[in-house]
Image 1 (tube, rainbow, N blue to C red):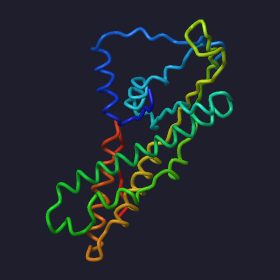
Image 2: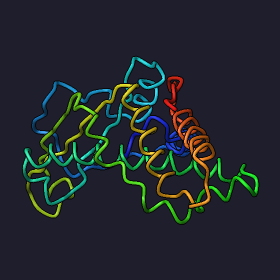
Image 3: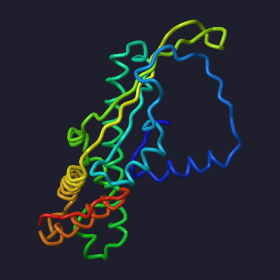
Length: 224
């Protein structure tokens, strides 16, 4: 599992494919020698996160795992890496939803409306939402220490850490992040000939579609 995002449909497809395909017995070269809880938390599973977001408890949740080999030898670095990855992937997913919404709106525009903004191919690079994910809070984390053993197939006997972090963002903050990022993108993309009314209308369309792409997304109250 690499990323778990509340609105990634591909994850559902992969889960369905795995469920219907042949069962594979995975062989590990380690034993879990220590862990932060008595058992692995449910929220590590992507399907559980999707269901959690469907409940619409006022938050959007995202999980990141540490897959950086250089930090696995240190529990502290492992945990911080997992949180950083959760925030990075959350921002990337939000950006992806906005770009997808923009492309969908772009395809429905008439000739006159298309003159309002540049093409999606020209504006994707200007959209940066990484800093906005500062509005997400660390909700919980999990770590386990793994004892790799030669007798189990490892190249040598050694220890490493696996870490996962779940972050969450309030629905109203999530909507605000999408709306603000959409606004910045359209502002960067608008042409000199674009009227304020046309630009405002495009901002609203893109933001609404991006928010709607999220499971159980709240209705958007757009400030003109």
